[in-house]
Length: 366
Image (tube, rainbow, N blue to C red; front, side):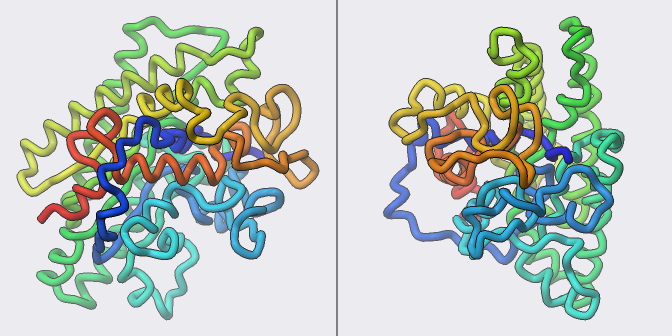
């Protein structure tokens, strides 16, 4: 079995690093009509359970800290960052996975939002193909098109578009595209990296414009963290250090995404966005991890082999008892504790970590 990768959520590690939580206590929970979540395994809450995919997490020890100790398909020991972001806007957890919705109750179930994320997927249609079946971002948008059509029929075009304009659209994607483009035996030149990032960003732009065309106005973007520091990547280094080529690509992807979003708002006048610089968050966290209660930053809590990063968190794998002390749950993904801290930083953090505004400001903007 394979995990859906990224540490992307590891972004989670974003761990509020440096999280200047602007008066979090004094700020009332902001409300939005609905939350729509797109992305990869860092946000998947069970879509891959319904696919013929190698990227699954619907088995122990996943979910050991989830209510009822249930393995839901989340690549986590409990909740993931999609859940915690949804909680910040007043929901109990992430909206349900799109593939779990019943035909008979579809129209009612979509009113508070839907989660389209799929472990192993990416911006490119080809990303994750070796996992047999995932929902690439383009397919996720196709599913949202059905939701958009249903909302329009149920509420009328004007009311549906008013609802969507106030809703939060979270997109956590890109790490798997970087992973799939990486070959540890054939390093890419800087020019080759730049060409890849340009193509990736151009494709990303098309997807975001398509979302805008279906009513999305508030975009909460989560970029790639230092994916070269995931436990599985450390196993490829003789010294156990981070793989800097992957980290360089993650930095370049964030910079390109930031420029992309800035330019898109010039083209689409009603578009608002917030982009989480999870790379900066994680770096800050590594420097200040003790204040957040983490003592293990390199080894996964659950897995096998070196750094517990040579196999997935399968039922026969060992797992740590002190999960709140670990940054990583498995070879790619953060623990519930890390995801919770990351989501808090993304929602309330300063411009050093979330720009040009944080998710809370994005939600409350008119």
